[in-house]
Image 1: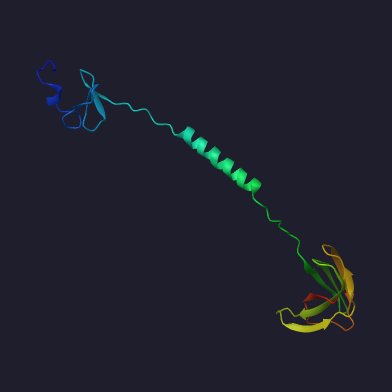
Image 2: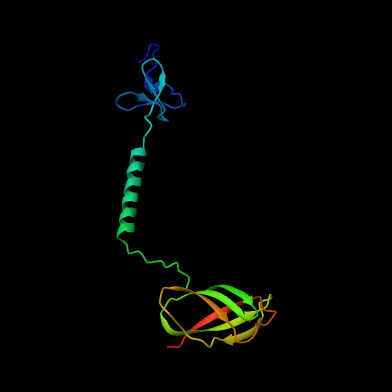
Length: 164
């Protein structure tokens, strides 16, 4: 009972409700205040710190990722470009290109296809000279053509054929 003759159970708490006794103190209905015997005091709740749990979680996920990456099979990624590249028309009777052989071949020939600026095929002829190439090696070819290259040709392709 307070000095003014009103019991705490009859008093109104700061939330406008009747307080309840929790076994240790009188507490407002909304749980935000407690009675210290003289006045209502705000209940100070300790902030829950979850960062240790977050750090542990990150460490566990990182450990699992390391195990998965370390013990899973890694596919071998071959970045080598195989086939012909770096095409150049030098003169009306000479072309050059690079060739990277994926497989070995003792009699490799090419079919040369020439295109104009619009990408329309203007000429095609087969190579008459076979070459030996080793798998995984790069070669540079300078080819003298047996017939003149169409003057409208601006670029070409060299399609390989292994004849062995």
